[in-house]
Length: 302
Image (cartoon, rainbow, N blue to C red; front, side):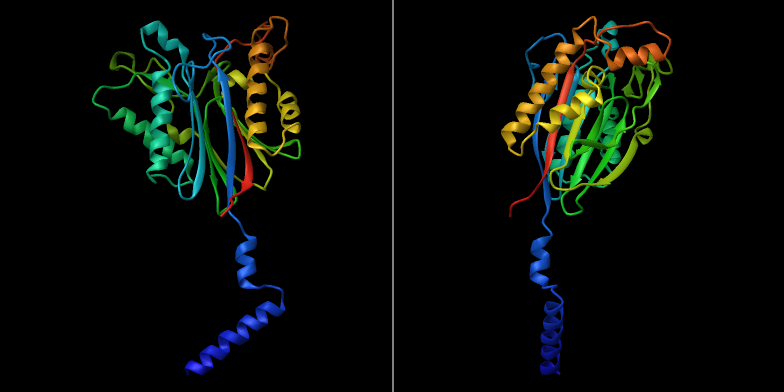
């Protein structure tokens, strides 16, 4: 029986090889992907300078991390109106993104369901003994290295693009209740319950998309998308080379252009066009915190 089994394995290997399907060669041909990343941004209150904390620009917060199976990017935009109540709007999004990052690193995360990490992080904030007051949008993008698939969850008007060969092939859906009022996660004092918008993490728009080597992922807050149209973004991407330094340089250039346009009072920005569609006569860029995360899909060297 042993000799028969050995013969069977030999015959099977020879048959597969004759078809050009050498098993070892097939395994080597299918390589995992990873993301080569860069990030940049500006706080609207700290012109031409970064925010004072890591992973933040003003009321924007973000993270770039990975675990054994996935590379994960996230961005959140705090709601500035909380300043009117004596609350720092940057604390909520920063805590939300820090919690998401920690859960990814600890392996408490299914890369195929990024909406669940938003929910788990939000619930952890809600359960704190001293409630963290505030609200923000949330966008998480996860590249499953073995699946060669990007899984996404987006709540609000931050968002992402996937660009291939200088063409946008996939884009997040912007979620707004009405003009300039995005869907948002919130923790509010009992005295203000029912008076402040608070959406469920389950309302996040979730998608998945197969990616290829060389595809570009871009995440940003509305400070980017309200000041730069899709064609402007693609123009920057079309000049991008493969090197990590070029990715960082391109992220810097995009953030700088978004900042410049946000301060141009004569510019017919995407934000002003949306305002006109809503019946509001408005012209110029939108001064806002700006966050750009840029990533290139590359083969993971082993």
